[in-house]
Amino acid sequence: MSIPVLKNIYLNEVVPALRKSLGYDNIHQVPKIEKVVINSSFGDEMDKNGVEELRKDIASLAGQAPVVVKAKMSVSNFKLRQGMPVGIKVTLRGNHMWEFLLRLIAIALPNIRDFRGVPTKLDGQGNYTLGIIDHSIFPEINVERQRVNTGMDISIVTSANSDEEGVELLKLLGVPFRKHSSEQAAAA
Image: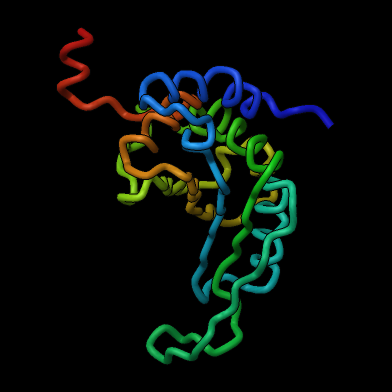
């Protein structure tokens, strides 16, 4: 099996650039992407057929079967019973992770209407979570058979020590971060 395109870019371009900009002597100090987690939750309005359709959609996006997450306890205010399905998640590592990230960065994000970039807010430890309102931005999703637009969270877990390292890693990989108004004024 060949090396994914984005992993090749990471190894040949991003790692040397990060070593130079961050001043690392050892190649193992350079931040890397450890995993990508795709998570989609739904309310009680989703029936069994809807859950199965969403599971198939997430499986076609990820390239592997997702896990159906069930409620751990009953909550009467939310009409939720223990054991009811409440979401779907899948964790990507290795080549599946790199191929999904390439499709996300190069194809899906530019498909968003009036797209101006994604926010640069990380979690304080170098990890990035992106919320997507409509999963039909991915070309694998068949919009004709879709009944409901479903959102999802995509979490990119990195080995970066700080948000600055995480942002630098993701920028070099091609994540289109939103420019702040001060950067836009300087560019004009």
